[in-house]
Length: 241
Image 1 (cartoon, rainbow, N blue to C red):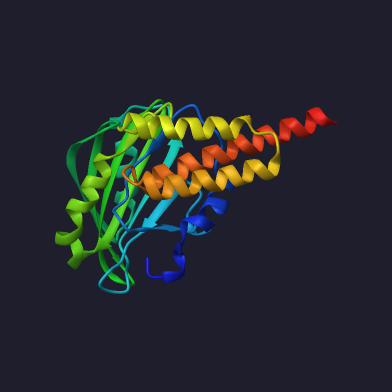
Image 2 (cartoon, rainbow, N blue to C red; image 1 turned 45 degrees about the vertical axis):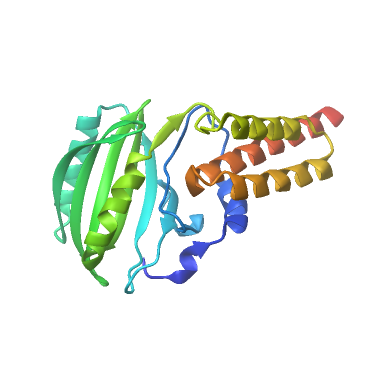
């Protein structure tokens, strides 16, 4: 990916990301490399939920993204279908690197090499099927950056996590309780102006004090708070009528 305008700061990404977000019963996230930036959701294909962009040595900047789809198949069956798609691309070769252990369970790891207008690009794909959901993490880099980047990407893949509650992965009990109380306070507010102020306070708190789980988790947590607030305000408006 060669366009620098694909990057977007977290303050703006929260507004755009909210359009694509809804409250969920199960959440999944991974930890992108540190200091990487979000890719504008408008620049992503429909199946890609989130993407991150790093700094490269040439025109092609390293990227990592997460795509998902509902499936009714096993991991092995899904991987077979993915391989069939790759085989149809004459400019791409691939090899199966076997299983990769992630926090969410075992994933299948593929390595791809493809020719682009930016030169030869190497890609990793980690594929996991869980709860009838296929998760595909794809990382791409220029071939000459492979030695520098492949360990960083594998580490990001291993961090893939499923959770029923976004505060559960927080390891520090005090920090977990502090965030839970802040979100609870937000949910109990009825005045829209006070609620927006509280939401901004939580945003600063998460950005400054909860960096250990990565930018993807931060986005999900903040957008869940936004979604709950928006739903509550709508209910209050209907009740007032």
